[in-house]
Image (cartoon, rainbow, N blue to C red; front, top):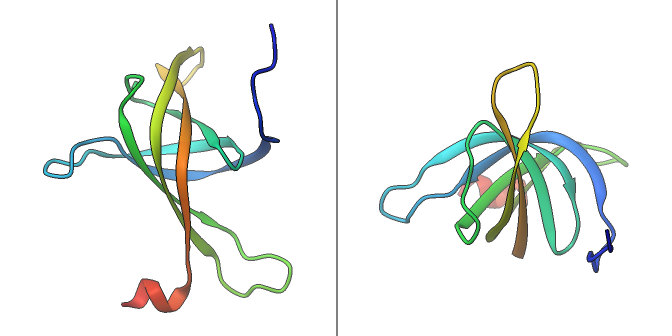
Amino acid sequence: MNERRHAQRYELFIPLQVNAGSSHFPETRTAHLRDISTRGLYFIGENAIPPGTHLEVTFSLPPENGRSRAVLVRGSGRALRVDAVPGEQGRLFGIAATIHRFDFVNSEERAA
């Protein structure tokens, strides 16, 4: 198998909110982020998301290196691939997504 990734991936196991619906009827799902890069991410969830579906994701980076607060990260992109993930907890799916934009939201912007 040839490696097609153009950006370094980093393992990151944190909860993730995924909105994969239309702007009129959003479907927000909770999933778990498995890895991330500047161009995409891979997460595990209970719902399959068809390739090509527009996604909005939100997650919180925990405080570290002198930061007293978590940093909220929002991103938008498209689902690229869905994989069935064998597991003991029922049916799970791995979703690979390309991310077109990441926004970092500080605490003042969240309060507004």
